[in-house]
Length: 162
Image (cartoon, rainbow, N blue to C red; front, side, top):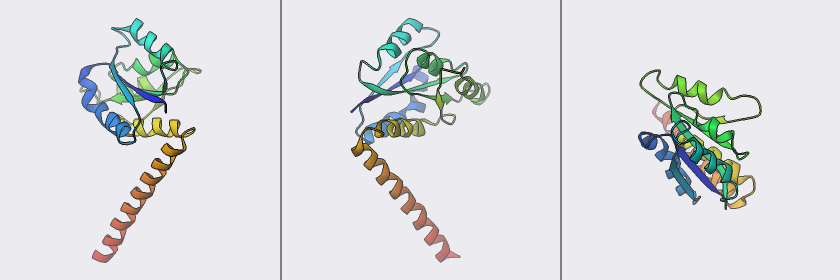
């Protein structure tokens, strides 16, 4: 099974990306977490992204706030799917990071989840891997069915109350 890389621009982003790491582990998918900066360690980031496919990765999650060039810098150096997590900062409540992550030039796509949306980033990476992994696809289907059943149970309880 392919691995997923989780890259953050700073160690201060760890609380935001932790749900992605936890979700990947829950599904039994190996992940590697790294701190690499688009601005402070550009050579190391480029080398990691360029070698990610050969290193066994199937998708890369990149989380950054403010200028949020991390996901784009990764995507510029690999053709693996890159999923950006815009991180909420105090200045503009994450809107700056959201716009920087989602507004990529033609030819360098970055899938972008909600501000601080690490769990969805992990789930999207799992769905990408599940295209060629039937066991992982089955696990995702089971989770969707359980989520649906939970909502229907809440609906049933509400109907009884009212």
